[in-house]
Image (tube, rainbow, N blue to C red):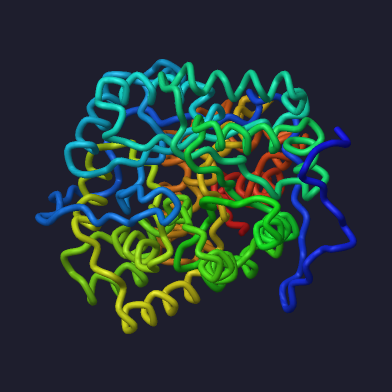
Length: 470
């Protein structure tokens, strides 16, 4: 559409000194090929914690004066009914929502793409049982797939969000995961079809109260959006970024296509744009770490969970509006409530300790999977996140061995092989990867998933033969 207000001029690109620009794979395929599965109900790994004795910490949105809980509920990992192949457990979700609201949580973040397309409806059912002014709804225009780029399909997705969430206004509407595929992808999703113009008009009409975006991928897109903000072409009310104490300085060391949290946050803070934080636990990796790193944190705060360090870190900067957590179990919710009721900000000494831990974590051969499940379903039936997360668990436990002479070899062999069979059915394990690379198109972390699966399978096969190969 040539009459769109928003047009991208590649000749006016903002230079970013000292940070390499990287592309990201386009999110192609149908929405069904990238939607995340949610989690079956089972015993959680995180230990139980008491709810905080004080009141929830809140931050005020300067655009709307919304008093938002620093703990936001990420509705990406709702519990599913055991044995149902991913059907969400509405009763369990209702119970979690009720408990969260009763203890001060008022921000709920969902998407048409979450939980195999079920999240918005199940979240809407749970929230609709409470007064509309007691919570804020955040959802997204998740038009990743080319067949959803037309104005008609994007509008259908947008209107369905209101229907499923049972509301006549959205508090926080996000352009979902911009940066994947660069500016060409962004233009196809939001500019050429006039959807960004439409969403701005919807904000003016009051059906959207805050308009923002979530960012993954090409830094050029992030910088362009902030340049438009500076030029007065559009006002962004908030922005959602990935930030944790590892990604703060080391995101690009993990993957050159990532952007350090320090840069993302500071660019927003200097413009006064509130930040919403995703992946504060780095896909759970900051809740379950190698024993020596765990000991360092436990020595400093013996009574605190390991996860609480990451949540305190993510919530400490004043420009943070809320920190999202995908809390599948009530134990997770209780632990996070204890952390944020109220928030005890990270001290300078604690920050130095966390940066030391972050640097040490880089030496561990962990696959940088955030368990977002955008790679699912695999066209060949593999449980990709299950395989990668089991491997990471073995790394954290010290059960990846490099020699049959290792005193821990027999134990490590049993833990890896028996644990994998318990975690992932044999027909869904890495040996069945065909290297089709379909999953790589959808990974926000730009992991070469087939390469990792083949590496893990080679290691497992060596263990089965009584050998070792890492």
